[in-house]
Length: 120
Image: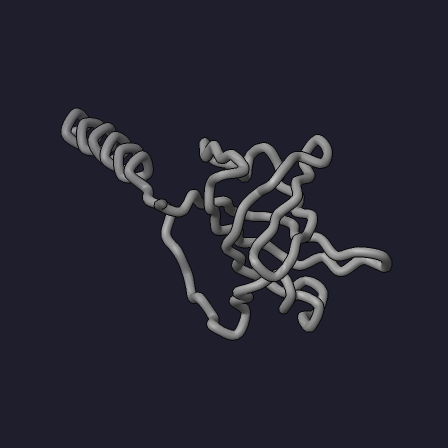
């Protein structure tokens, strides 16, 4: 009987481990009121607002700072190395960035949480 209990504990542990290994990252609620379509609209938004922008990352400005632009203007974005998640882009690629608006005294910046390459 002890062997049966021990065997069932081993299988439970293995099953739980394999179930966790199959975890899939899922999305959440996407509030249309927080989606920004253009850089120009950012000046009317509050600090720490979540934003979604589509455009191009034009060039690197510093270690984790880049110049992002769309048809309405440009803004500095900060993309931590781990936020790229394997995505590689160049100035010719269209991307979607999701992040948080950081309003400064002299300039605004987006703290990017996700970069997604858009299909051409």
